[in-house]
Image (tube, rainbow, N blue to C red; front, side, top):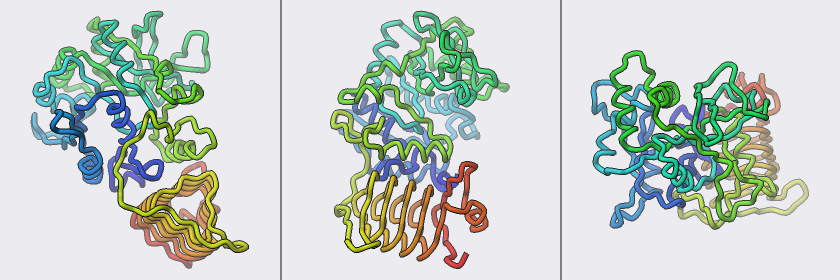
Length: 395
């Protein structure tokens, strides 16, 4: 919140011209997987619209990306958890009749060749394979934490433990689940059907399905994401993964893109991130006068943007943004069609779509003032201006 006030998190814009969900979908398509269902529920209209317009695969080849809204197929309840979402849509699995099923989250930022994970999953004859990555111990309580043996078989799994177990020889690091799974089809169906009968279950993969499968003696393995290789990706970017679950994480992952040598390289032609393509003109930078120069440094600037005598630094400007003369934008993310009038100063801000910043306003410099204006301010001083916000230039 407030970026998810009007939309599902996978539908939040990222990197200027993309949505968060474009990363996982591009990973699948780039890996050769072309039969994808997206299970939606919370405020999914903009997400479903994006999928229908941006992700039209070749139906003649039986390729598809299809949004599946919650339908109460098994009763009067909406999805009660991630496992229940799959249980309520088992008809999709029956219709497609796959050997294995990938169940991935739609709200993470990373590059991954999914075929490499499937190859290991089948090689060890796993019933379930979980993609895993080392995380600092101080962050580990936000994840499912694994212990594995020398062959990669999972010995223990704890969902969001208060005192997470560390990795052998690495006392400051824990092995965390990325929330991405490959299931053998029958093992998945049996697990979610059995889970659906339990009234005390949270119907969640991390809390219920994984522990139950391990208790039943099924073969549950970890896939080491740090071994995943992307063609054209520099070695220093291997294992990059961001769970953008907070505003601070979202802001940091976004600004990761603007570095000279970013860990996540959007310019790799061997692994394109696909999205919707609008008929916007090229970005334009106008005026070259003292204190009135249209310029952007260490920034991403999308099509349709006009920087008219303003200065942009370490920021991301979405499509059709307008920045007028004598304004300064620093370490900020501006969504589609934001208008920044003259003599505005923005620092460490996220500005949602269609917001107009009146002339002379200074935002991101005084947290108490920004809060009195009705803006969201995080503990570390990041200011968020929500969609539809009408700012008072006298405040």
